Image 1 (tube, helix red, strand yellow):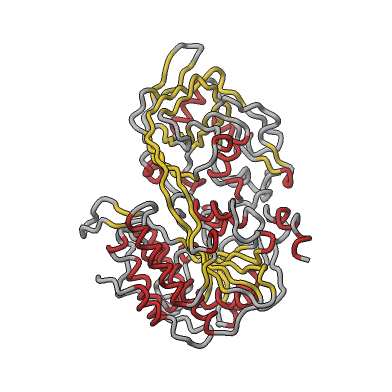
Image 2 (tube, rainbow, N blue to C red):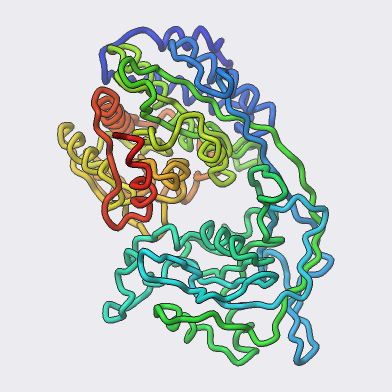
Length: 551
């Protein structure tokens, strides 16, 4: 399609309207534009990014927002490290007692990548140690490490939480939320913990149920990885990080007289201690291509009139997956019409409504993140170098994938029990005649897999709207129709070229969700209310520590 001039389109959409007038036609226009071939799939560091950034800024200017980025500009620079492993020169387990080697096939037996900007990823005869679930949670009375020294070693983890598969009669049952994953269960936490303890490599035993996806998804990265550019003293200690196939791990443990199934049970007890793999070492020498990719967040604001230093933040990611192999229709761009051009469009509509209303007491910040698809990197870059203090950030409200199957009788809650914002969601959804349904697969940890999480880690109360978290109870077709939409989208088009706008899209449900998010932010922006975390949340203590700043 031909791209209309950005400023002209923005001027049309900036026409004042009544508050809460979320317009599906405006949303459609934005999505069709951002998901068009002219934006080339919106991959960071590409021509597609340049065009996307220009488009976003043009729209925000025409809507009357002010720049909120670095040095008074519209953007915040986000340098990204991009690495890609080549064919291994050496990748194997060695058993010292038998002087024999077990070659490992990348993508079959093991899957690894690196976030070190070195020409070669090397691991020299590093001993393996099994650390169970690798959890250090003093607030839950849990420590899997018991003071073990991991420096120069390979840490081997189980995925998910210690109570994920626990029976109801086991002492650990419910200690980490049961089927609902905590951050301790995420692979990102396990790699971070291994690095904090100086490990040279970290491997997670793959389990489809525990991680929520198969080995095919694990290996789909092709040995590539992205991270934030950091100074040498802050680089990860991990030369390699990744996964070991379930059957390969079982055999590895068995060959040294250990039963991994028994160790899985032992790891569900608080008295678990790390177990050395009796003389087994990892040796690796893999060439690495690495480069720095320059990318940007886009930030805009509506200043508050009474408490401008207190900020209500909305967020959505602008990036998608760029160019890929042609699909059945010959489409090469994975343009993310729903994930997350639809979220971006929602933010524009929220901003338009705020500008049509009276000025807020608190400032409202609109964040359009880069590199979400590369590991929440744009939002993490902001969280590490915030332009507005987290302790004075009232809340982060994130839009990332909305259902396009029509009006719903409910709204899907991601992260039940985390914070008080879920109570606001229930109250305002009820005014729409809707109830709240809890995400259907909390064990997949969606709460930790979207950009709002970068702010949650700094204690900022958050709320995520994500349509694939559960089957909406649709007005037409009920839960069955809602589940069909989720299955069709996640099974066919998630991160694929067919995540494209289509004439069958029905945005009535998305409009409902955007409306309730507008209302939540509007209440916060016109009051002195400070939402918080609920007891039991792993983020409550972080927020509590900065309570004096909000008095």
